[in-house]
Length: 262
Image 1: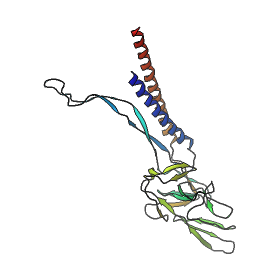
Image 2: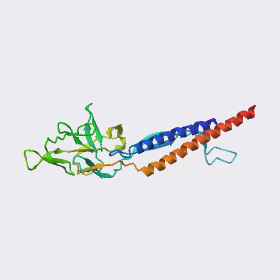
Image 3: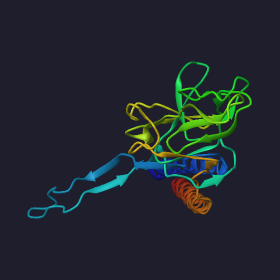
Image 4: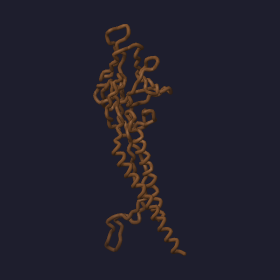
């Protein structure tokens, strides 16, 4: 019965992590380019009372092992990199990636990070930056007074400058891909950092095979499916309740056993 208490407790802890993951997904249902996560679990060790193939008599052998599992544990929170729905904004510097690529941005610490959030804006010097002020890499500067800003599917940024009537090319936006994007680490602010299993980044121009293209005046929405998350939440709640009931039942049985000893 003590074993049952401990086993059920691991189930409750695991479902708490599961619920935490679901809650974070639902909280970010309106976050630009958010990638939902899925909790993963694995069973713990087993107590073996009798191995398979053990002699049970003079001429008989046990066909199966006799084992009792000791519970479960939370092992991973895996990001789902399926593309979210595209949302039209009408803003020329809003960009959605149609494909697996990431934008590169640089934080004040000098390190490069990666994002799918293409809600770029011009800062005081004309640099294209994220909502938190982190500039694109390589940098793109749109001079003051520029009009008819256009960003092509292949990342070419052009605009008509005050001293000209013809579009001028201002630079090219690059994208980055990884061999294993699920190995990236979320760090907040819609940013990802390279992880130990993400592999080395490959930079390229949009339109290159396997890297994706850009869509100006669009943003990628969150890929969280509210109905699916609600179903998962109900399932997690029921599993938590069942494990709680197992603890209560084990406690009742221990109480009965203690009374028998008196």
